[in-house]
Image (cartoon, rainbow over all chains, first blue to last red):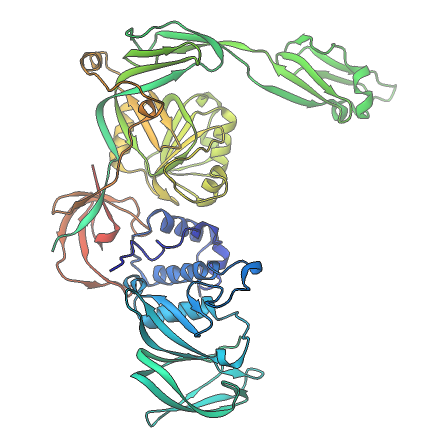
Length: 221
Length: 382
């Protein structure tokens, strides 16, 4: 199995990341100079592990920026069969997360959250099918671990009422919720007030499940 | 459970190596292959062109640039000494008289009538090249003005650095955990290699360049300052070709990180002695100050000099080695950076860290405390 020496071993342009952009992901960012030194030490010692929770948050912020930087330059995004980023397959609407990354982050939810922030947060949707993505852990064999649902709220108000395995969930705008859904396929029924999902305000769809489950990201974009 | 960690060479003691001594300009070497040299021996002499200085005469005389020439009292290409009259403008009853004297010894090289600036070339001077070391000359290349000398030396390997090979007298400017500020860099340190502390501030580095300091050895450096030396990048390829007029070697990492005790204690022994620094290779050579080192140097043969690589320094390859209780280690990364100690215990089971990761921990006993760190954050030192 492919073994990463560190979370950032596969990125060769970490030094292009600015301290300010990393700080933008942190609640209480340290001074820019300290953050810049932290980032430089991560480049110098890629195999070391963060000890504290705040160091882990900083690592995840760096990872968000590193993933964002992997986007193809603006002029080279025409051949979008696989997407403009090696971690996205826009044709099959899959988020591709390298499984070895899990050795360096606490859990799959945190890692998925990083990928959503980096790859989809400021992405312009081309059609309503891009409200639903499959989340795949890639390695020697790929493993589907869940799905991502991106409701479209109008004006930042409303809510999604979602039913899965006879359980009801209510997702408010601005929140990100992970709903357990361990089966390979899960049928969900949703009703959205003040918005749409997959072009409809109310519908039933089948989504991929897995060890992560269904992620519903109601944050505005 | 076996744990493997990278093994990093930090200090190599009493190795027979080659160093290169180069003339600073055109000149002649006075030594030949096979000759034994001592530190104070002059092995060559060169004429050094020391640069130039620009004076804004237009501003100093308060006249338009095109009128500057008529106020010059010396001709171009003429020699002038410091304090001699350079330009003069008569005043009126109410003042306006301007007197400009030469700030340095030199030759009036060029007057730019568009800007009113005068370039004064410094007078070239003869510079002797002392051997600086006890050793045996292997090559005396008159054409390149370089002598290759076989010596006995200790070597210190840093983590990264910047700058071409330079040499000078080693001076400790602070404690191993001190911060080095601008006011600690004095003009008398011209040609010295300054070692100290956990961090050289940017203005201290600038001041060192201005003073003509040959090199700086520090525990840490701010990433932004290093970018300034490395073409704006923070990458660490095998070969670097950076130079900003000073050689810098960083021994621990980025930020304020105290210089490791192993290196600092060795530097104390060599303070006031001749050393050479290669920033781009992150390498310091500390030639033996003892005449008795010549015995080992004479009795040791090195492989023939093939190219510059064989002279500049052997490549020290990073290896991996199994960690054991009692092993000397150094902590890398952002937590407890640069701390050194010995492994006191190794955990056989995974431990959940506050960061949320599960990993194997090692207990490291430093001179001050015992700390638990991930095995992944350790380097074995030798």
